[in-house]
Figure 1 (cartoon, protein in one colour):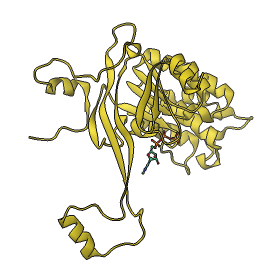
Figure 2 (figure 1 turned 120 degrees about the vertical axis):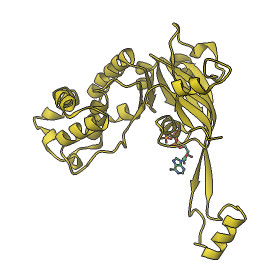
Figure 3 (figure 1 turned 45 degrees about the vertical axis):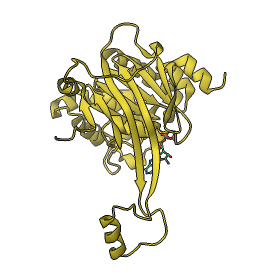
Figure 4 (figure 1 turned 30 degrees about the horizontal axis):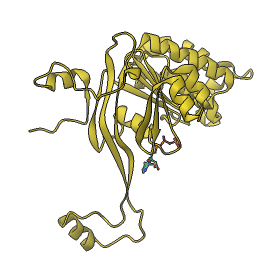
Length: 287
Ligand SMILES: Nc1ncnc2c1ncn2[C@@H]1O[C@H](COP(=O)(O)OP(=O)(O)OP(=O)(O)O)[C@@H](O)[C@H]1O
């Protein structure tokens, strides 16, 4: 029998489930259920992610020893495993803005990358409705090209036609504020001349120009200045109303409180708490 892909659409998953008409969803508390009956957009079912880091031990080893390891199905001596996500399950619903919080290295970015389809889970399944889009501070942009070119390329990469990209250009430029930043039109300059905050403003402005089924933002707000943070929080609220689900990873509890209605607290790769924002953030801050 063909193996199922680790990430599939909810429609596919529904079609594949034999006896039941719906996908089995992980159990969860009443606090995480939306007030009205909203459809699920992402189902994360017992996901584990193990990174395998090669060359962590000293020495290269010979070809003969590598071959004998392969024949005996033994692990290479130089491979270290990092179990970054350990059995995470949750269901996200349309209209929710979900904050992911936790200490450095708790697995927040890893789980987002799994949902975006950039990292296949080692075990477990992820079902999503539509294509989740990951907007991270490291999202690829061409540093040697101008902001103008990056706006158009970013729009095309999100699936717009050239005409749609041209139509959106002015909105994106104005929202980013980089067309008149300290009296200068930075969009005419290569992106390598931008500060990291200016680059993340542009990334956010491009991604926010489209309605996303599932939009995931990794720390994007933390890097903008206060004015831009306020603008982007308002835009996230609008995206949430127009679209599906927003995930926000941030260490800024202010951003999380202002933007999210539900928070998942990850600790060493497991969910420590999942519920309404105030409850979870208060517990995280030890209040
Ligand atoms: N490419 C990688 N290869 C190996 N290990 C990795 C890799 N990326 C992350 N890790 C490890 O996985 C664990 C989870 O990392 P992750 O980046 O998901 O955490 P995070 O909660 O997003 O952290 P932060 O708040 O610092 O951004 C950490 O132990 C980290 O060292």
